[in-house]
Length: 198
Image (cartoon, rainbow, N blue to C red):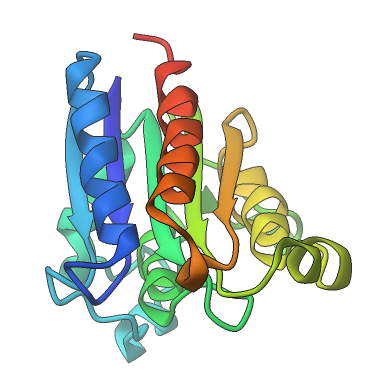
């Protein structure tokens, strides 16, 4: 498959960066074609521009500044998102990637009278979201009810690529983990990637 690995962490030595690099190696080793979107490394700007916002509902989307990112999204059959969860949400740079790249005419079409949007990413079959959190599992799952997963599943993937199978693997209390616990989590990530069709 054509796979897109999206990394959203500012530190090259971070756990997220390591997991993203390992995911690339596993995918390439399985024979997949892999593109990497290193949002911080590429200096991606998270802010939706005035022209982009104005064009959301008027004619064609103003995609000049994000044409390369859109091109990579439009050919991806599978996406791996690797990012830290901060304040129980996406890092701003990843939220900006959704705002600017998953745009009208790209990821979806507007319906008449502002009704339910129409999906466009029919080629996207798999998404694996790999995230780290400082909090324990019960805060995310029981108190907050997994807000990041709910947004991905329902609002983003569910509306733009409803046929896409989403899986999310969260690494809790990430600042306190032993190397053995990190390796155990990596094993879960690797097994999830190995289940993808070749």
